[in-house]
Length: 321
Image (cartoon, rainbow, N blue to C red; front, side, top):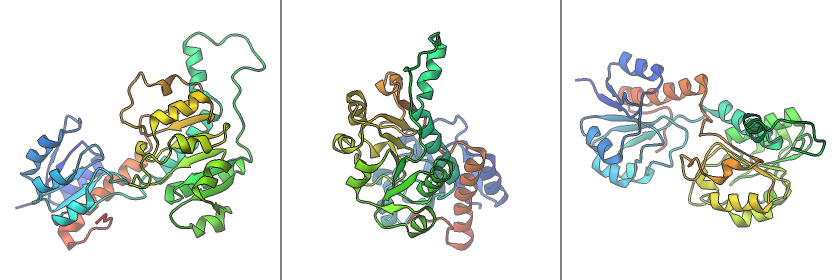
């Protein structure tokens, strides 16, 4: 009897075709809405494997209730929605899709930086409101990025590509803070390792690319924003939980920092009455870092391959635990 796989959303056709061709019996959540946890638990009782995403709460309760599952393959790079230790306890293999969205997410971070520096979202709104009138020499001024200092928090794969783009386009100086030094970035980009406080005080643009952990949760708070330059831009394309959104709003209102660009918010989705959406120096996107055909297809391939290889060889190519 073929193994049964449940797809919690309608993922790209590539994943569906791969699993079908490998002989799996698959079922797809065709309505494409996130399934509440208890409903997903009940569904999974009939399946051997789950292809999930970040909107699924895979905590200890879920894993205990679904400990019969052999593997959960995450259609994402991040897996902070999964209790990895509990999965290990119950013998459930967890896989993900690392590196699939590197270029796409770096593009979004780079784009947000430019959008914020020139108030592009706000200026677009002025046209919609009929406020594009006569030329005023001192109005709506942004600032240029050439020669500025980029501070990268979490200089991994995506952070390094972001830094490469900034170096090539604007000759930006690169500083970074990591748990450990990134020698490749230091050699190729002349990046300089600094303390967290130095990152805050020296950067003209801070771009966040770290994982969400207990150490990084809420790290960018009122104290952190107070140490930043009042001309600095804060960019977060990693996880919304890394910044304290109420503190970010207050910092922007007080002029402690100049602007912010977010592809992730805290919480998600952001409410339409959030004050950030009305600020001149802010650009917010609805978590579209991986939203390219290329990235989503690669995520599909990797997450499907985890399941296929697990049942074929007992090992997976992209393991979390």
